[in-house]
Length: 104
Image (tube, rainbow, N blue to C red; front, side, top):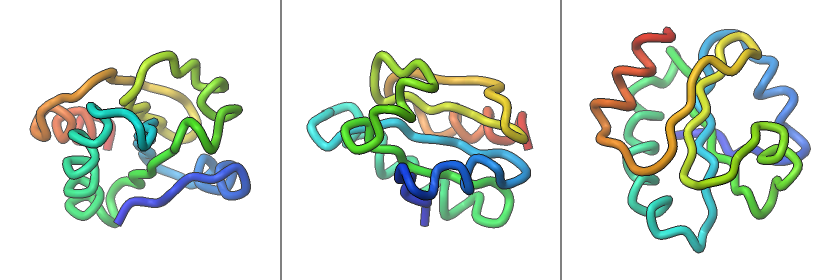
């Protein structure tokens, strides 16, 4: 199960070592609802290897702004606190998995 980012827990999640994948999304976003189940599957498959977290842009506007989120869904790949990659839009599961594998 992926983590849910809030304004309260964000710094702790960001400070964790290793790879963090943040799914920036919103409830009203159709493409986000399409990508959501894929992110859930990847969170289960990469449990213990990578942290996969969801960040609702409506609930965490400051966090979304900090990462320069202009379109959703956006996946941001953070390795040891530094942004190393990002994707925008709905991508196939295998393409996202390949990016995760690249940064593990």
